[in-house]
Length: 584
Image (cartoon, rainbow, N blue to C red):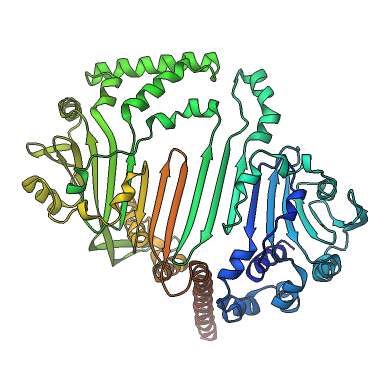
């Protein structure tokens, strides 16, 4: 039943379009989360998608359970869907104000008769469902329900509700809502509902605040206002990229506790661009005002939103940390904060291929074996901006006295353990696992091919920025496995041997991703975040995403079939050997 429900929703998305929002009247005001899917824009963008030739159709025919096959072939046709559903919005919600918790979907339908005919196969699989008619304030709803699931409809809207229990009662309550009890009465829904976006999600803490504010104050002494914290998320499939936008609005209490508007910064040391290499596969940048962050953390000891006992314990912890810092390093925690400018950049490039040993262990025979594989190990480069080199030199000197793993190669040039190199300049700390680049920087003071001409340099003005492209996923996977093998040589024994299904799939899935997707950009600032995922090919990003998922599903199915065939072959060989042995 759950599989059929999921398939129903996906098929409606691919077959419909729309412009209205009449289903909002059935979403309760106390919903913690509300989402919408714009069927009109998605339909327009999927016009050139040939649904009939998708590989997933053959997979359903070959692999799906009988009930799914029948449902798809008989009822999930484009003609059937278009005859049943109005071309508007799907709305979803979740509510936890009631002790049971419940959620559901509101679907736009053309009329009651067409929807009932469409849904009948599902109802036939609910023989114990209770049927009620003439439900709701207009007595126009028909409702079928079991303990955890209820389906109801009138002549315009269908509701599908899931709950821990009493799903039917929850659905019937929704059919009696007036405007003041619906999501339309909130102070955020009209502003959140953007008909130009393909989808949206809104989360609010207000219903939780209604229920928990008094309890927290009574039992924990926490005088924090839980209401009016709102997060909205939008996603849209554009011509050559997928765009998402996240907006965050917190109330005064939460803003004072987190203080991020004071210490999140956008500035960065421009000299970082001279020491980091060009053409990165991954670039990460973060900017924090370290002094402002220190002041904020210190101010929490006087923040009356926190219970008095928490403030007092926090004050003691700050004092102990400062005493320990002055004793062990000779610097106060405040002076340490003043040492750093607050911006950090990390770059990953393709690096080089190395040979790695991957071990296998047979737990039954105790036999150990290994093979030599070729892996990509990325080069990593980092830069941390410093504000006061004199203070940092003092800090480093103290660390070097206590720890012996830092070896000085020349003034301001160090080797950490065996494979990491660190260079200290007047305004930054540089570290890398690439000895050639480290030597170049130490000799010339900058890299010849550096980030100063990075084509997306303007995006570094965000507080947090992440850029990726190419086969960074493959490099990350190989590097992580190599690290694991360093500390546990049998960590990767499944790379070959008994079951290497996921390794085969991983390699192919990375190649498939690279076929459909290109660069990724992610930004975070004080008011929210934004992302751009660029697609390849001559189709829009929605079609490319569907084709990517389709090819991924086909590949996984092929890998699993190959494994099954190999297993059957091994069993047949073993049986032949046993028969031959017994006959002798």
